[in-house]
Image 1 (tube, rainbow, N blue to C red):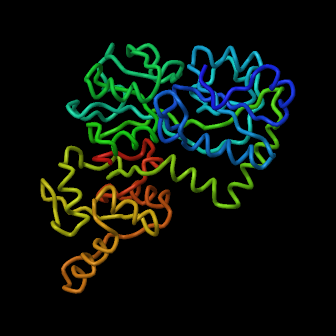
Image 2 (tube, rainbow, N blue to C red):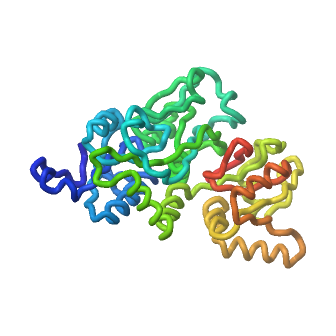
Image 3 (cartoon, one colour):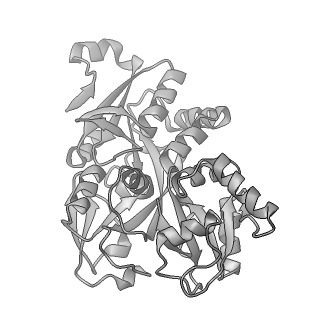
Length: 351
């Protein structure tokens, strides 16, 4: 058991009401939980738990537990709370009282960089090996594919990099994080499911589920929850088209060059209508996806428009509105945050 720090039994009896004990599953990785060796260093979940404990005048105690021990010890009342995606809940589901959802997370099928593009899960050859976090349940995979369990998303990513298996199921935050760390992933991804990150409270917890939800609401009003969601769901942007589009295998650099005004068409002579995110999302997308500073991106398009050569990409403040526009126009090309992907779009590249 790893804890920061652990109480002795005598101290526990005397000071129990002053402590909030959070079990942290070792199956979770960055950015939900950041690890230093086997100690919790930070991340979205510890930051949220710290906010809740501070709001109730409690000292937060973080205990790292592997999935095999997590369920039995939480069910036995050894810990007060645990935060999990719904796809990783097991027998503790009904034994805990669950607070309001923190955020929604996409579970993705990803592949290493040498695997050819797939359009749908049915295109994966039957009996293929897929890496998956131990304890994660996804009905979409049952029966068709062989699973190789990993103890954590971090280990899963390393196995994928070592070509231990061609495919892996990984959460969108983890996929974005590992892509940013230089892991060679294929430029496509398939959405398997959307799950909720929620925190469950045991009957022994000094904080009830209702109180935890109230603290989350206070975090939302203060802007902290938006900051945590941004940390969890960003970075991560994709160049996408409608499923009805003819565009499929397009070199990623050609797509980037379109958005930088360096070219007007791509292979095959296609000149897609360009859609772009607006506001702060545009700044994030230009830095990560296009690898340009926002001022440089804006100046480049100002010069293009001044010369009467091209119009800048059409901007959308709401990613869901941009996604709807893609559905309506199969000839359009758009930029979406990874959390906004769904089955209506095809990913041509992501970072």
